[in-house]
Length: 423
Image (cartoon, rainbow, N blue to C red; front, top):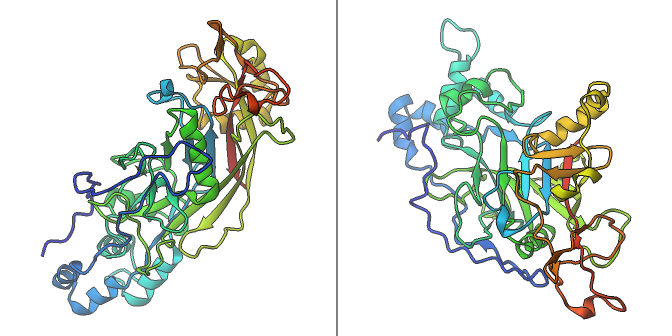
């Protein structure tokens, strides 16, 4: 039997999924938007004959016992509440963007090295197991072959239930691969460079060279609110590992029947209005709390996340209210440069102007507006940037009972971008 190709890329043709269309009513989202028809485990039994043929039965059994080798996660996650039908095709907008830039990434766990060192002898004349040996055993290991990190929003109780705004589960839209197949020789060249290191950049990857991904879900405010409800109630952003070249929703796990368990990280979110503000009109479109979970154990990871970087998004015509920093301001202030660097990871300089001091972002004139402005008698009413003031919430609309004892506001409620950093 031929060994599986270590550089196998994910295929879409074999996907059989029955995704449910997202329910846009945020008052009763239930389990809408999750696809629960996907399998949760891979079958590695077919590898036994190939391993035996290559190594002999004794060594093949040891290779079959190699544990799952990879660990990793994100250190920056951003949420953007902008959601209009005009934004779906714009690269400047997303609902969630996550990546590893500082302390996180992908690593090969010490448990892998310990297992190999205990079960395999060095190849003469080497006196210890070599990098090439580690790479060969890792690449042939049934638990690790063809594993690829992916980002998606999944159900907390069933990781194979994947959130899809369209109802049609799609690779690179709802489930986004990152880096490349980790058992590929050109990826292992980076991963096995030094024991215990977190790798964030893969120069030889044929796909993304960084551990970074975007999820859209921003075609309208109702879908945006439903995403927030799902993330707050039963969903979570996840970094899991794809273990099947035909089933894009599957996740690598320990083989248990616990569908809530799998290798990787979960990121659970809590949303609200801007801190200290409660006007009763604005949507709950600011990310307040982010909690990281080890999906394999279900335990909360002790490292904390700081979500205090909140940026109000202005109309381009109101750019004077959010002036960008001058070159002299940036050159003379290391703290400011550090903050701008954080923002620029997720908000490109060719698409956004930023004022860190004022906490605001403005799309460039060539970028689509974050808002479809509310109009009265064909006159655009603009955006209410004062978070304490009453504002027009498109999720409420013109329902007068929602605005007791006052005229329905005309100015749109502001949208926000929240940036969370792992401490």
